[in-house]
Amino acid sequence: MKQLLDKPSIFKGQKGLEYFEFEEDFVEANMRCIPMVVRFKLDQVKIKLKLHEWAKFSAAEKLALALAPTESLADKMNYKDKLRSLVFQYTKEDMSELDPSRLIFDWMDGLVVPARLQEKAKEFGWKVSVQQWGQLSHLQRYALLKLTNPGHENKNFPIAMREFNIV
Image: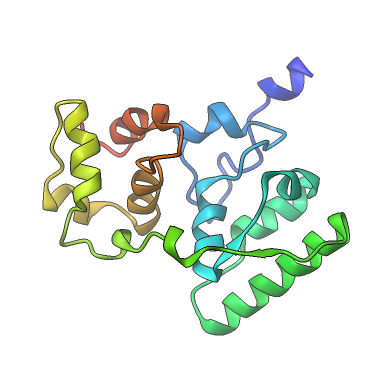
């Protein structure tokens, strides 16, 4: 088991995939947590994927979900269909819809730094400028906001802030 945990995840260094170093300590080879790139796509298609469902998917299926496009409406429908099929294949249950109140949209606007991000940064004595915020990718902005969620373990917030060269 220890050897499995020491291997990097299949996401690390994958061409065409935005993956963060701060995730490596909790995703690793067995991908016991859902990486931000997949969480981002799940939010885009409004699906709540449970960790026990994710854990049943093969490494190839997890990678395919991370790489699959979700830009167009057709992409989103295909992604949902693939998820529905995988969840049912492994659990014999229907997948869950995401509670719309839990969706994060603040990442979309690169011209306004969300207040909750500024509040979290302030806890560390930091301030995020509009220029810094605007230079981040959509996924980086999404990840920072996800890491500020009240119920989320926020230990990776300062690590992500450093990785994204904000502090």
